[in-house]
Length: 130
Ligand code: C2G
Image (cartoon, rainbow, N blue to C red; front, side, top):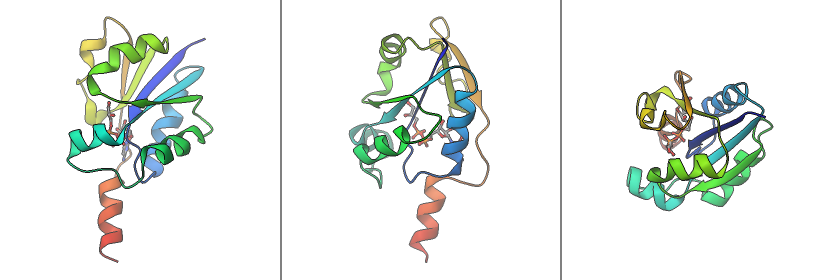
């Protein structure tokens, strides 16, 4: 049984999010997703996500490729989460290229190409300008 772990905010869920979850799952048997908390987002991006953390958790849990979800409370706890969920492979989009290489003694790391031309920020901009 190979466990895959990935992390993200997944705010205003879009096809780029779906693609990375589908591709992450293809690396193993179980996909575990750490969904960034609202407080972590405020710290990381200076604003709260559009969708509250409970809703983002429900959406991600409802995706067929996802086996379990948890709340990611801090960027510095990756090692703990990896051990807690017995993860074998960490998958992240390549906007994080190299950023988690320090974890490589603990886990295999795969960076996947982001889906082009879609992002939460661009969706928010389009809606703002309607
Ligand atoms: N993603 C993608 N293609 C896009 C947009 C996003 O492949 N067009 C991927 C990102 O690379 C990431 C995942 O979808 O792997 C979630 O993206 P975000 O919600 O933007 O995640 P982020 O806020 O970067 O949080 O501990 C790490 C952080 O929690 C990651």
